[in-house]
Length: 148
Image (cartoon, rainbow, N blue to C red; front, side, top):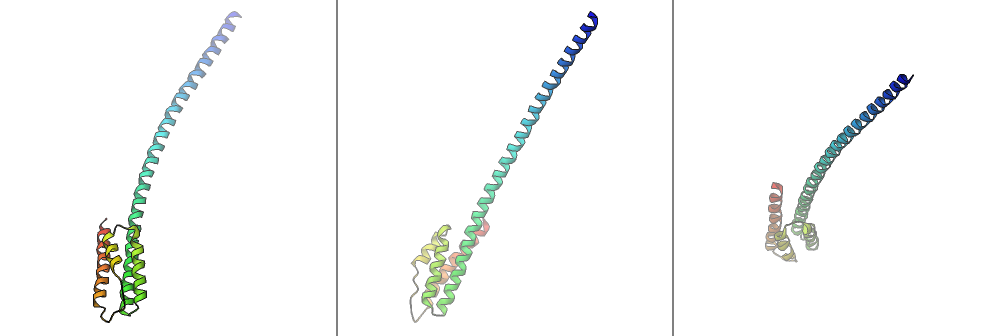
């Protein structure tokens, strides 16, 4: 009987040792896998953050380009109103065009447009030439913004 109890005790110790060994191997492997998952998740997060910054920069550039395009449309409307001798409307379109350029880097265009005052006159050639100069400056800013 002593021998039997001894074998049972040895068997129980062996099973407990095996279970503890399997538990610790599983725990070690689990922490290793979880660490690798965390590293992959961090790398994916960093990649997404870079992509978001790239997209935001592109959105800002496109916003500046849209502002230039809208200013160009307002400038063309101002030219048309000037040709129709609607000086107040032409002035309004020019001011609106300059407001649209407020957030862009078109300082030269804002300087040209801000200095231009459309007034009632018999000969519109001088004012028309100045307004076309503003429109041309917007076109140049558009051409440089399309190259990005």
